[in-house]
Length: 77
Image (tube, rainbow, N blue to C red; front, side):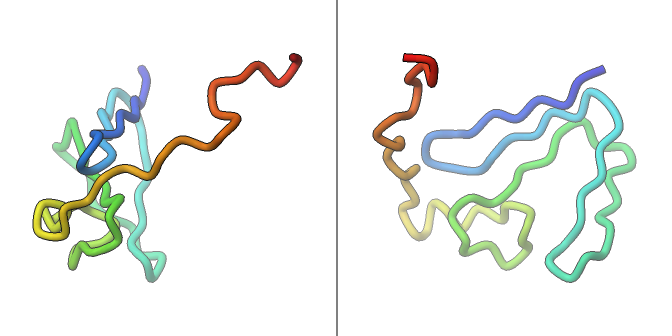
């Protein structure tokens, strides 16, 4: 079973819970994931429910940061 992370271009990080996963809030308290198959994590830093997404990215017109200059390059090159 696998946990899969998929960023949305203008939104949250989608976490597909295909197996055990632990998630904690900003104070280190565990977030109950029982019964969930998917969690949306905030990337815009404006969520009132951090680390969970509350949709604030639409209000602040969030866009993913540009890729790093060396992103995708083979480090052996």
